[in-house]
Image (cartoon, rainbow over the protein chains, first blue to last red):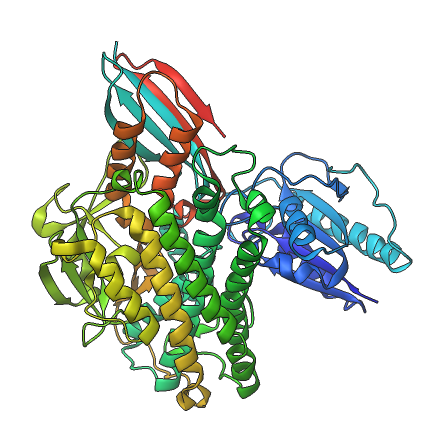
Length: 158
Length: 475
């Protein structure tokens, strides 16, 4: 059976923007079978070619606000508007993988609220706390996926 | 009443920026400016860190050219240690630098600029992107993804990670290369070479298709600056600086890049956070120069790989009597020549037994209090300048980024396009996209040059002589 991929992305030198990679590293420390974990500064188009190898992909990124955002991207058959620049976003990336490679996989997105985004290599206490919560929720989600791809809790992003 | 048009932010370019177009009382374009609105503070953040950490830190400035920062940082570290690094380490650093060129150039051409060219400047904006490209040019778009993946694969195989690898350090590199990885990467070469040649073929058809637009895309006289090898060949990792003028005369040669502050000044303008570097002997702004692919192919005497050299000869035919190509639209052509060169050179390096050597790092204590590293990043010459105390703790840092060095030229390009295409008080979609495309010739990385976070959407404002915004486009 295909594996599940967890991608944490963000700039680790922009304080809480690094919470995505931090969460991914915490998940990686559990050494779960059938789960690959990767961290990136930003998402690049070439990742589309990698996603075909997985049956589900979980993106973890920093977000603004106070609430965790957790959703499942549902393919709608329509391309998103554009890939905006040197980096891309989960929705565009997954759509690209589907259109170019015909890949079929479930996509989940976690937004972990940050407080500070200035230069700095440490997470704020708030972001770290929310990051720990995100780790627990991702581990639960992974367990559910292991039993056959469950619907993610929370609201769908699209 | 005179007016100004502003475009902000620019899509498919990193960072945050705005274009303002100033109109006169008759609605005729008087001036246009490319503003960068983000503030750089990264150098200050680096102070107090150890010189050995700087590769890992500076590679996090940017997600698109982290390897260039890593390598240049390591070279500044070499200077501070006062060491000559082992042959294997230098060749491995060269290899990863070419991987960086490949992935960056592939993204710039296939995914950011090709939609303009293959779908047209006046095509529907919702479709003028990689997804629109997929509808009619699926194999082409797919090849672009694969080419970028090959570049990233080189970085990953050498550095262990695709981005922000701390693999290169002052004195050399941390890990030796393995034969199995070499064979794996060699397996990519035939496809990569075919893709580079295909891209050149497509671009030449584009040159014909856009024959009326091309003369207005940054067609002006300037200096060209970059590193060249000891025999005058195209260089990407080391070498000495050469300055050529718009007629192809070499006005300065064999300049030591570690003495860059003697040759280049940085002017500031109130309306942009991005500085305006210039060539000191000619002053500001007459000392405007361009860096990056167009400059590199213009200033070198030859390219040390057969297919790319054959293309360079064809490129020079565009220049005619000038001996250099003065039109920024041809950044794309130069970029693809470099892409082909990178593939050929990667093959040469992979077949060089020296890359499998075990002597990969020269170790030393702090021997100098100051060091400058320079290399050719995908967008142009990159300088890292560090000052350290006796323990190797950074006291001061200065980073001179390629995108900033093209700032004057980008502004001149925007003005030329605005003067040619803006007529009246409205910004049409075609004009908007031509302004963006003019900037994209340089493939600027504003998050890199301002060391800021985020992307660069487009904001254009048309402003009259009294300062009133008469039209505005945001996307």
